[in-house]
Length: 320
Image (cartoon, rainbow, N blue to C red; front, side):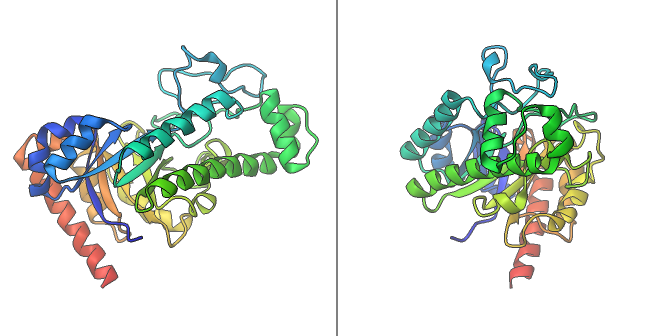
């Protein structure tokens, strides 16, 4: 299956400006969930509908049973923004799969991007609170059974079997990715399977990409067509050119046959998009989180269009 270059805003609010998208190089909209009205609007406007599908995130206040357990044996610290759930909660896992299955049976999106496909934490902040987690008795037992290691406590696991624990978590996330990709492919064989990912390199924050978030691109790549690092520079305390820096580091750890497409934040526009368009490592299209605001103003929309044309030409030169 050929994966098309897709450019456009994330957020259903962009539907208000759908008539302006094509004129400025946008050919897709990403929106949350299987939203019937969003699909209808995309069909009217002639743009590709792409779904952001929530996997491992929940409201802890309403569902405290989903809070992962920390090293100290109690639920992890969390604030307003956090992702990740206890993956041993079978009811939640089944509900997530059922929601995906219902969506792919009812609709035909161009792509489905899996979001929060990770262990617990939050990286869109200058000072992330990185906690080792998922040490409930069921998760520990699952680790021991899967690895053949006899370890009864978080302290023993981390002090004596740390890399095995990290590898196990990464394999667990990759297995869910494979399951979801299989369900999507069974019902929508031409659907792009994307994944929103932590934008860090494997060495940052003491290896937190794998150690905390359990995102191993090599393990995920058989299931994921397009990796989409979340480049929210201002929110993360990074400069706007971080988009280009991140993109140019991806060949170090993303398999060569995998595609990388950045999602940029409208708060960083236009600097981050300009940096992305100037990169020698090419983004396979671009998403703009909150991008509706760009298409509400012709001058800003043309800046987007210029960047799209530059990225398209660079991809054509590479492939031709």
